[in-house]
Every structure is written in structure tokens, then in C-alpha cells.
Image (cartoon, rainbow over all chains, first blue to last red; front, side):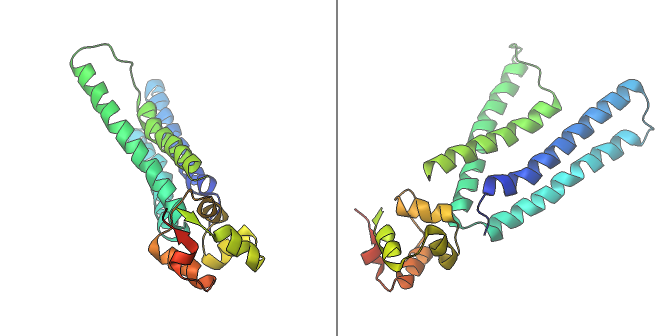
Length: 131
Length: 63
């Protein structure tokens, strides 16, 4: 039985997310410096996301097998929170940008981090509710 | 939902962790149940009642 879902569930996930972000950074730096071979950026793109795929599988297994019903509910509420916040905000951002209204420039790392942070916030809120 | 879980657990001389282990849930879940912060599923409610040899309505009060 997992007693600390935050650490066990999200530790590996955030590590994998950092790997994806580092991969993104290396691709951009490599392209700028012109040091990567032609196959380099695509290879880096795929390899840097591989830990996320593994983390996703672990996350799924933990959610289905290792968490009890209340902890599952906390995680699902956290995911739901992220979804209900992220989608309207993302839609608003896209539409404002399309309309030509000034919007902050978001890089791929920002777009990757936003849902992860929202899930963490959602889980923290849900945990407080059941404490 | 109110419940008599803390009383029943104390009568049995178990810690929250003991009860959690017997139910196959986390200690946080037992704590949330006892404080009335979390309402258990029907299977978990039956498991709790059976563990203490009571009926569900003797353990949980919907009011």
C-alpha cells in the first residue's frame, strides 16, 4: 500500500518531465550551434520523451493497483482539476492570439509544465479536502 | 457521514495503522474515515463492518 502518493506517483513523473525539457533544450541549443547531425534532433526528441512513456506506465499501474479508493480519488480529482483549468485557459490563449490580442509568448517547456503543475495543485487541493 | 470507527478501533486496541493494514488501505484513508472527511465505498463499508462484527448501520450514520 502506498502511503505517500505525491512522492511515489509524481516523483518519477516529474523526473521524466525534466528529461523531456532537457531534451527540448538540447535540441534548440544544438540547432542554434549547428552541432547536431541531420538525424540528431529527431533522435533526441524521441529519446527524451522515452522516460515519460515509462513514467506514464508506472503511473497507470500505481493508480490502478497500488492506491486505495481514497488516494485514487485524490489523484483523479487532481487530474480533473488540471483538465478543467487547462483546457479553457488554453482555448482562451489560442483565441486571443488568433484575434491579435497581446498574449505572452509560450515556449514548448511552458506548455509541458503547465498541466504538470496544475495536476500537482489539484492533488494538493484534494488532499487538503480529505485531511 | 458520522461513524463510530474511532470508538470501535479504540475498543479493539488498534492503532490507525493497524486498522489500515487490516482493511488494506492507507493510514490517511483511515484517518479521513474517522474524521468523517471521506465516505467509504460500499465494499469498504462492508469490510469495516465485518471486521468489527457489526452491521453497516451500526458503524455509519448518514445523518
